[in-house]
Image (cartoon, rainbow, N blue to C red):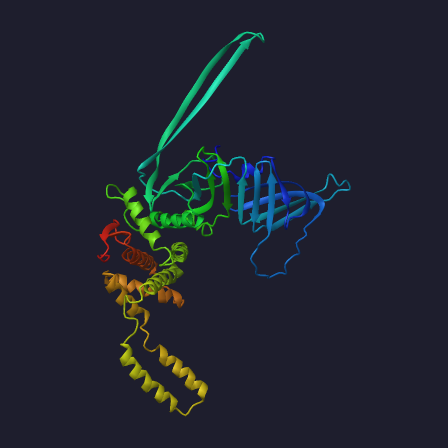
Length: 475
């Protein structure tokens, strides 16, 4: 398999040209190792060592909370590698009177791995981010074309003279499985791919970036694409190539798939990605949505929002409403922090409040109670002019020129039921699930209005899943 077909860290490190040069927390002396990715998308390092092997890193007491900074270093004729966050998780040993027959076996989790190759000096010309869970009922606009050539030669000769027989096979295929779009001066390709059946990764795909954009840029684009497609894309690492398609460096990370819930969630694009077909992906629509989100990524704290969004999508119905409510309120808070003059952030004007609060404080000071009680009351008075979340939301919706129907307003109250642990009527689960859909749509509408990412939204609440204008309420 070519290194641009799929991640190759395992075949690189396991081919015998690399050795562990610093074992870090592992038991030593070592005999051999293998590294790979398991069905949970974790990176697992398995080592074999002498039967009496020991680690030089002390054990941490049970219950210790810490950031694992342990590393293992690899070196070889092709380059070097470093594994970060190495955590031994299991150990077994076979003890023998003959030390050569005894063996210590250890398996360790690895948080991330970086490989740097030294056989080429040419700069990076493209970077591929490897993904899991890139699948769905999409109609892709662009194509992947594969071509393979095999040449055969046979020579009949008497050492001095002879004849050469030659033949060649040329075969390939084409699949409609990708989209090419441009964003902020960058050319980006998003594509699905097929891997051998033995591969543990579910629904593999990748994002290819021309040039050498920063890791932060690539991470933001993957998050924006994930939201646009309505799919939680699981990031697995990246590979960098020079202009000759030679591998320059690669990285692998422990895949996080929402405790495996990511593969169970149906694709739900928040807005139409085209106008011709259901589930169409039009590069112009996709570029607009991704570009708008990227432009506001930092100001609206979309990295944190995406984390909250996908955990809300994966949550069970009894608690999902509180997750959606928290995500919506976080988005509103970020927007109001960015544009502090967007709405009035007090119940009454400052001059009127100054006069009123003065009377409150004067009355508190005259109370015949302990000073610590008066201090508590004065602190409470200071918050009396802060509008409740319902009024903030109402004012913000008006500024953004959105409309919410009565059912949408009722659904907004669900977050309080979930947050306070209120019991759910056994006959009310269908309505609960429908209200959760409305909360998700509410977030979509707010985000689109704040960023200009789309003029319309997918109404996944209404039977038939209508496409509605952004200012139009759910029917």
